[in-house]
Amino acid sequence: MISVYEVKETNKMIEHENLDVRTITLGISLMDCIDSDLAKLNEKIYHKIISLAGNLVATGQEIEHEFGIPIVNKRISVTPIALIGGAACRTPDDYVEIAKTLDRSAKEVGVNFIGGYSALVSKAMTAGDERLIRSIPKALACTERVCSSINVGSTRTGINMDAVRLCGDIVKETAEATKEQDSLGCAKLVVFCNAPDDNPFMAGAFLGVTEGDAGINVGVSGPGVVRNAVRQVRSADFEELCETIKKTAFKITRVGQLVAGEASKRMGIPFGIIDLSLAPTPAVGDSVAEILEEIGLERVGAPGTTAALAMLNDQVKKGGVMASSYVGGLSGAFIPVSEDQGMIDAVKLGALNLEKLEAMTCVCSVGLDMIAIPGKTSAATISGIIADEMAIGMVNQKTTAVRLIPVIGKDVGETAEFGGLLGYAPIIPVNEYDCSAFISRQGRIPAPIHSFKN
Image 1: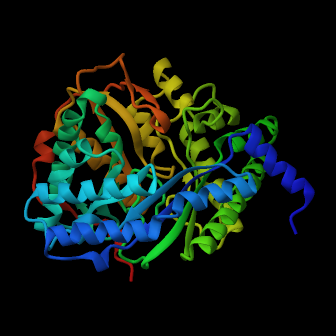
Image 2: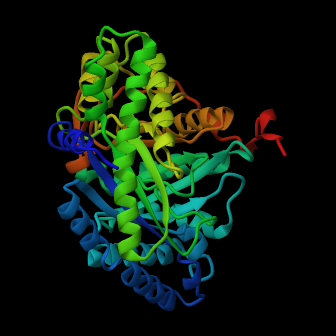
């Protein structure tokens, strides 16, 4: 039984500490939509999404009203479109037509993002994969709600450096195609290593081929709750600090479990996973950086930051796993610069730079996320940064990702404005020494020795 104390405690978290369910993401398999006729394919995709997701937003609103738990976003993820469109799409522009169908479907059902305009190319690219990747700049420029991702590496297969090189070009082209909006298109494009099949968070969400026909995945977030809990044990030792974070993560995850179960029951769609990720927003008090500073850092980026983040990430996962049998996705702590006011402040003060952010990605949930860099940055340099981050994921057997935004027409000292949950970001300097000779090598970096497990 849930006690009166627990009810009051949860209400306090919601009212004063920014606790929310960040997203209910409905995963939809499009495998049964495959058709060699592009028009028929688009029609099938549209009707499949409308039929399954038509009441997603209304269901989320009902749960919000009934339980008093804010559900910030209702979203959709689909099977990677490179797989679905391979038989029908002869050119990159054919794939763009599918992107438009996804966008129209998302608008029709009222979700804010739809993910899955994706390709999985960790070992090699098919012709269809390459066509989809080359279509991304145009697809993201002509749609509002479509999100794209590319998985270019894994611990089992190594890093596809041909895809990494292509991704550098695509990021630059996407930036140019959306330069009137501070290169906003790049905020909807993620490059992954070890991408999970069940991630509910955008821009990297897609429904993996190991998933069923449909599934409900819920992402819960509560940086403000964790920060306030840590504040209560400022003078405590590490044991008490870790116990406090674990207990708080447990409580947050139970809220997500409740919402996931209700959404699954009401929509008649199986529950997939809870993703407990401390995903910040630009709102005051909803910052992962501020948690780290409560732990004892003057500013995030100071010596000790990576150790503090490693501890935070681990305790969040330990608490979450005790609260639900199906914790998955990314689960841990996100460090997106533009979406976290504490990170933004640290960059402005010079406490945090790209190299320190890369070190932090070794121990957090994702990687270099929502980082604005000078628009003049070369495609080869972007590919080099992607390669570094993919190597961290491959060797450490974890998910890593890159969401860089080369803001065309802006340089270090200026600010890019993205709006809404995407926030704003100061332009971070990038090491300008050339890596093009390395990036221009063809083939793939082999998998590490510890990948040979069977």
